[in-house]
Image 1: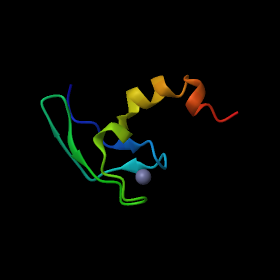
Image 2: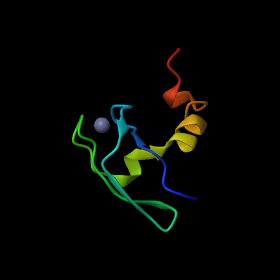
Image 3: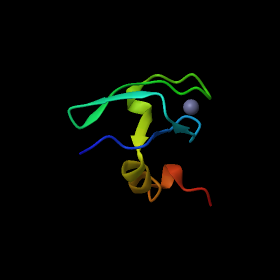
Length: 60
Ligand SMILES: [Zn+2]
């Protein structure tokens, strides 16, 4: 998998462009909006879309 344009911060649901990509996954990321830097709290666009069907992330 090639590097995505951005990761999505799951803490504040903002796109995050400040990250390091390697071996098909994010290695380091920091959200400039909320300061989150826990890799577990970032998702790629594809992962985020999968999560969007999850109840926890459903907006309505
Ligand atoms: Zn954030």
